[in-house]
Length: 411
Image (cartoon, rainbow, N blue to C red; front, side, top):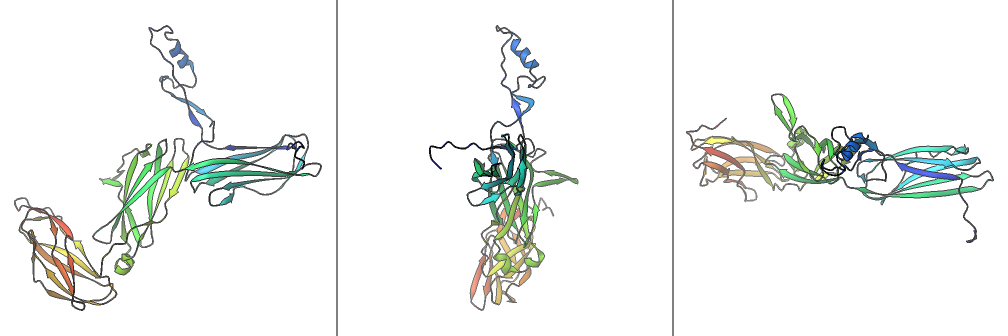
């Protein structure tokens, strides 16, 4: 085509509009004191204004809804909806019309058209309408590419397209912390912060565990058969506010006794977060699989199964220990008990525990007493493998509160 030749006008017009919820109209109040020159003029005008709240005219937020004036913000996890219309602005019939809508992200190109069928003809002042939806799963720049092809009455094939660029922002900042308990339990703390400029209604924050764990959420308080959230009755998360959600994961019974398997498990599960914005627009985020650092139990693991919370001074009490062989070889173990300044063991030290096969466990009930009040650490257990002549030391394996015998310990 000659560069000096005028550009041919298209017979069809393409219009694209993002579909979003309306917003509340904001009115700037103008007031003055009664002794000023205008007197009650401004106040009376605001009372007659249909956009203000009756009885609260000086509040900026009105009762009326307004349509969005710009594209607005789109956040990760929300659904992007758009209305696409192709209108025949000419006075002739257009044939073989095809409308295609693609969404280009930094990693992929997605076809969003509800139908790719060719429309046989489009009469003057007629239009083809389509509504597209897409759940946004990537942050960064997105480009909506709308392409239209058609044939004129003269048989000439025409084609044009338009580009609409928008940014997808991150709505939440999620941080996680893991705590490995003395048993096989794992505690997950999830810190969720609202980094948008408007409050969110937190509809659901749950943890979907991996196949080896059962989960129980610790964000609910039970009182006399009543169940209430630890965050109170208001489930709104204000801008820049942060909440901590706590979950406890326990190994399923079929995996609990397999020490070697649980030892190497690093994948815990993923968080599922559902929220709503001011006017009910829904958003959802799922994190990737959360991973923790696998606890280093070593060849032999000693854990406390039962221990009283409070004991009396200089009175014997019992604890139950669990010893697990986490290695791939059989061990022949000897138990030694060493007294500390506060904790004294009752019984025979240096006794034989016998052979313990790989991934096997044994339970021991031990007796001890404390000679010092306060919060005391249970220490001084030693396990020796006679096969390799290797000794494993266990200190600070649990804590117990020691009180005076004048104030009996609670059961």
